[in-house]
Image (cartoon, rainbow, N blue to C red; front, side, top):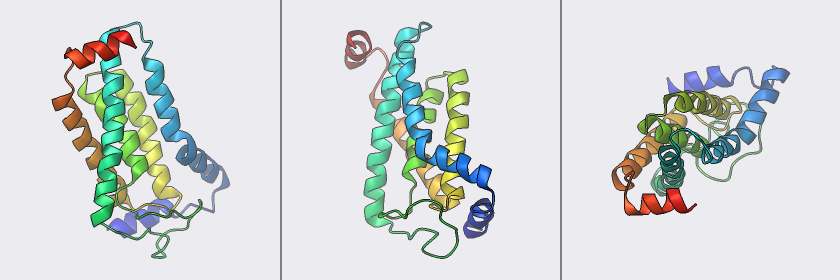
Length: 180
């Protein structure tokens, strides 16, 4: 089923120039744009300290999630779908393994952090951005659907860990959110 859905989502690739252009742009600039969106929240006027805590949490979740991916890659060495002749590749081939998707982890880590901190409107906007980033990774042929799901699980685990260990109002939180 994973291969079938991956093929279906990748099937327009190379045949629909406008969609190809959109997906190539999203896959290249989606995560950096999300990072810029989080950084921009630092100067929020409404509920400033809570939003700043959320921004730091998002950054920590992002880094921990990507770190977890590197550990997983040591044990799960899944070939890319284009190497298995499942997808048509629109981007240069990647040198690392397929599972989990770093783009999915990075984008969904940001969403998970904002969701766990109850910032609903921001979560929805960032969630839409993350959806397109995840879709683009399958569309351009570099990931299976399950790679993206695996990245989402890694992101969620990282967000939960950060929520447990980086508490709002703690000494380190007060230092970070007030000094910077």
